[in-house]
Image 1 (cartoon, rainbow, N blue to C red):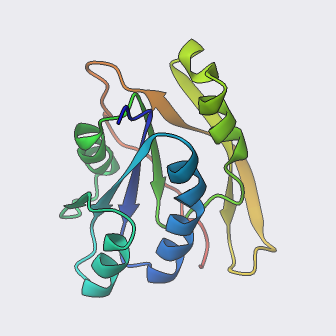
Image 2: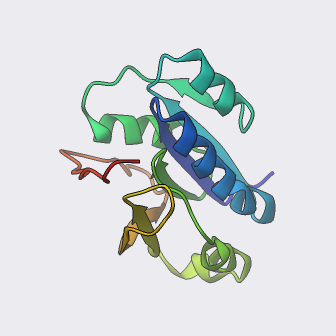
Length: 157
């Protein structure tokens, strides 16, 4: 299979939001040639069992307070032409724009792309903020994450 998109998910101990995140990725995995790689920082067996329901590509990662190192672990395992990264406390309400980006062939014209990401501050979805996330890049030789990546707190999910 010619993989167009590698999705790298950083998974910690957030079981509830992990399942929501993984379920939100299903349309991408079903509609475009894609792979899912889970970078597992959790030591909880329940989290591993959830991850195993979605992909065999699970890479244990000892958390060292370095998002660049965690992202690079996913990037090194990736086989896709493009790379998207997401965390277990984030999820997509709708992946149609991303699907169309790949299905239309538009992805061939760019080296990076963005999508609107919604960060929720509560489970019922009434408090959130949207921003343009540049979290999707074409994988080129030498592509790496470097330095400190700021991950602001997302509230209390």
